[in-house]
Image 1 (cartoon, rainbow, N blue to C red):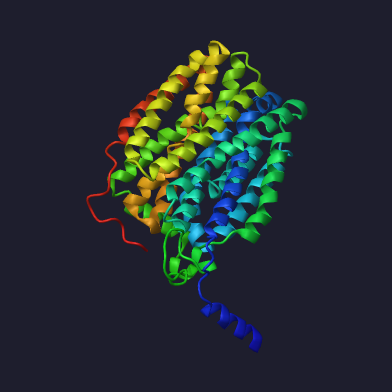
Image 2 (image 1 turned 45 degrees about the vertical axis):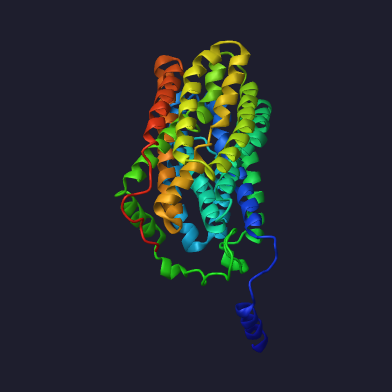
Length: 437
């Protein structure tokens, strides 16, 4: 009984680590791996949309409704996930996310009815994806980094692009050879393999390793608040929403991010392979095109993080949305024209696919402060996924009605041009930022 008490006392009074290496980089690495695995889960619907619908003889609209529910829940879970990170810790929530993704996709290979896919892909996988989404990267960047925060957010956001590079061509080849069930099985194995890495290496807060956030000097801050002090995570998420909704910039951020979601994973991520197939382009080739876009996105998003540390984020967003809108308006012609047209689209669209995330995170933190930034961004990200769900369903419905995806691409491009102007008025609020909890 004496020895444990002695060791506990020694641990409590031990000085903070003086190592030049900061554990924040280990946390960032584990988070990148987690987001990469989750990116594979989010890439799966686009690869299996055609063979899945063909097997069950379901229309594009019906299949798209499953994907839309998945994307909507993925977004709506975000702000509550941010509260869960504070209540239960990053590590436990991330492990739970990987288990949900693995279980949902693994069990879906046995499903045969529409309601079963709604439950597994819509609710289980959607919830797991929401716990391991962009809001996780924002929480880690805000909690562990003061310097290099924009760069880290850019790299973590780029994990989606890396996931595309790794998963899309592989999933497409296996689906072509072995059927659509091969893709969810691969993703189930990958997400399950990441869980023990998270459990052994992830830490919740710099104070857990006796450090301040990267870029700050001095003694570590006071111990982290207990779960009881932080309160119910659902109530906390809703309370932060109530406060944020009174700030004009919240609606500007949420509105622009709605368009961001509608024009990326809701439209291109879900329907580009099917749209290309309509134009006689094989699925594997289009999956490779998406992977190439992921390569450019990796460069663009990382660069965006670096730029957001140095330049006005409003002007960066103006440029990103404007270029994306023009590239989407060009896409219908690119699908029908020479192969070089799709290559040009892949470069310009890929460079700013999710380059909007680092400046949006930065602006959210500037307006609402570090303590509540992750939850507020969770609600902004929820708007992103509601936009994605809207586009995932409406694009499928438009294809069913008109026999072409062109109206969906042109509409999304127009929305991006509007969003480019919406972001310009975003500024620090004229009233004091919300007090830290």
